[in-house]
Image (cartoon, rainbow, N blue to C red):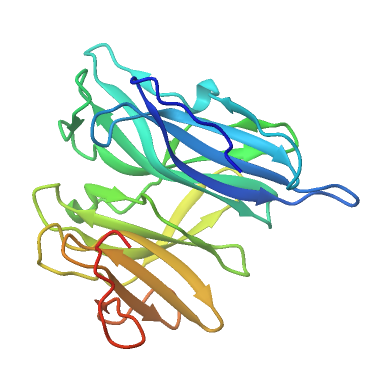
Length: 262
């Protein structure tokens, strides 16, 4: 099924990601999909739009750009937007959380690192009862230079049975240094997402290091996939915070996947 299609030269619809919002008794669930405009310059994205549908058969509604999720243009012409967003349902509070990366853009669409902590992890909360979004909020992280660049971007995160979140981050003092990856444990009270602690740092001094991590839980283990400019890596953990040394992704016969984007 093609939800929508557009390419008139000025933008492409990009980064579609979906999450289910459970329905009440006798109600069908709602599917929420977040999506952005790629503005034909590398990694240059609009504000966040969303689409919804009732169940698996209802018509798609949207895309809608609420003012809370739109980009903001500052007096100096710099645009602050949010990219690489992943939505997810938080059952204990009955809210949907969208987590992504704050980006500062020049008027020409270039990503800027012109102020300290220009690139940070941000989140917005959707309440299905009111059908309203909160504005983007920055996830408050330790006041340490290693978190001056701290992104959850293009990343799957996990809600634990106790309601806490495990949020993968790739961090660095700046974009000039290789990225390292860690997983942050966060608490969510229905409004605010707060950092509690984070696990060990996974490092690889090859090109841009280890970045764009995604996490999943299966049985009693956690699996973290990591991107590098040469190949993909994977690590495992028993608690979701302390991870083993990453190894290259391989098929069952030992052959490497052959793509760092996989």
